[in-house]
Image (cartoon, rainbow, N blue to C red; front, side):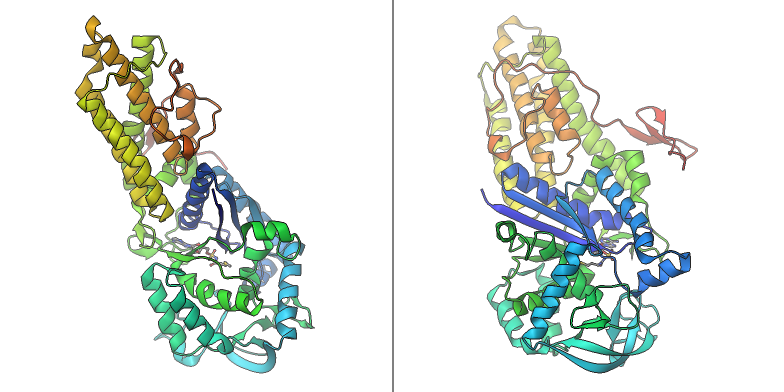
Length: 525
Ligand code: MSP
């Protein structure tokens, strides 16, 4: 048993969270859940990144204070994560007092050791990205190279963090820790970036005040990225509860979108190094969810509302689709058609039917009681061997964060179990008195396969997994990977008939979604 501290980025309070945001959190949640099922001491942190000029301006437009503005949005974030079955252990808001203290102490420490200096700065500022750019870095239209929106000329007296001083340390650290930045393509990008020369980082602003005051010069507020990155320390009580902090630090994984790998893999380690805090284990840059090739974003106008989607199809289905369809690290396409197809084929048909048929047969043939006559022949052994291999492969794949392959591995076992029903033809065995033992064995093997499937699938479909246990007569039992060894289902277990896990979905000719035969009506609001 080990420990696992995983973080998502903390999200900007955008009034339009989309399914792309939900992707990162879903992946992190699946990994956190896996480590819990595995028995690791797990801490999963997410939150919100609330400061900066952009928020201050939006709040002013609405005639409210910044905190009033963000409070409403953050309540929605929390609702979304709850509906998506996200199991975060804490939700950190950068506007919280506990975070201000960590940021101010960190800044003071770095200042006291001489790594921060003041200078007059004039630069081109991208407000949406809260970043300064040099003329030569702008895109062909003279706009921000990241978001391609216009930049503004700004002049201010600022404090700078001596990043350049740490360039050689960083290059050496990355060379000695080749797994630190993943996937490898991102790592190479970062090395090339740093080799071109690291500039010192402007870490304070005076042009607005919605931020954390700089402790040694109260006219200034802290630059949002310097503020935001430190949430990963605040969340586990850095400087407040040493025992708790040491229980989880170093972070095992900072999972982030590919466009913010630079902040996490260059600025963050250098900040930590300057603070004499141990390095996190890994930064992983995942790909984007795209719609027709374009990153989902409010300005492009192609956002898909996750709350509506969850209401229509259920959290498990959305989670399953995201994890199954998108290889971590690559971009992946979102489409309703593909989602519906996956729900029908993989969830309703393969998994849902397997459970339904198994429970119905055990009730019909054995009054609902599972017995193992242990008369396994070649067909049975094939299933048992695959089940055992599946647990081993799945564990390796999940440990390597290869979620898509892990999902496929589990579903291959489900496919095999469905085939096993066809091969063993229990309805024929039931007609032959002399095959009573074989029939018991087949029923046991099916129920036992489903037990292992439920344990392995919990990180992907946390709503259904305990329901599978319930129908198998294991209601209320904890799902633990340590129990995923063949033969763990006790003789005499009594199954329970339950609702179908996933109703089939069709679209009628008027475009309505028909779920399990009923027309879906979105909630009025
Ligand atoms: N506030 C910063 C992070 C600070 S972490 C110290 C930020 N916030 S964000 O709201 O813009 O993005 C949060 C995460 O959502 C990022 O990892 C980003 O990559 C991810 N995504 C935003 N749109 C996405 C897609 N269309 N697809 C997948 N992930 C996407 O950056």
